[in-house]
Length: 106
Image (cartoon, rainbow, N blue to C red):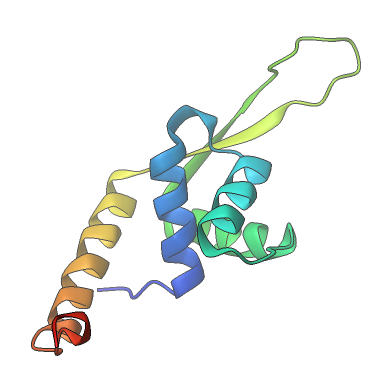
C-alpha cells in the first residue's frame, strides 16, 4: 500500500467531486472553499504531478472556448489505481479513528 499525503488525498477527492470540471483552477477553488484556507496554485500542481507519477490520475486537454489564441485546459480524472488508493486511505482512517471517544456526545 502506498500512503497518500493529506494534500494528495484532498486533491484526489476534489477531482472525484468535480468530475468533468476538474482542472487546476477549479480544484484550487474547491479545496480553498472546503478548507477555508488560501491555496496557492503551486500547492495544487505539486500533488497533481505526484499523483500523475503514481498513476492515480490521468489528464487530458480540452479547449473549452475554441477561440483563436485561447489556451487549452488540462483536465484530470481519477484512474482505477487512484480509486483504490482513496479506498485504502478511507479504511486506514477508519482504523486509526476506531474507538476514539465521541466528544460531542459527552
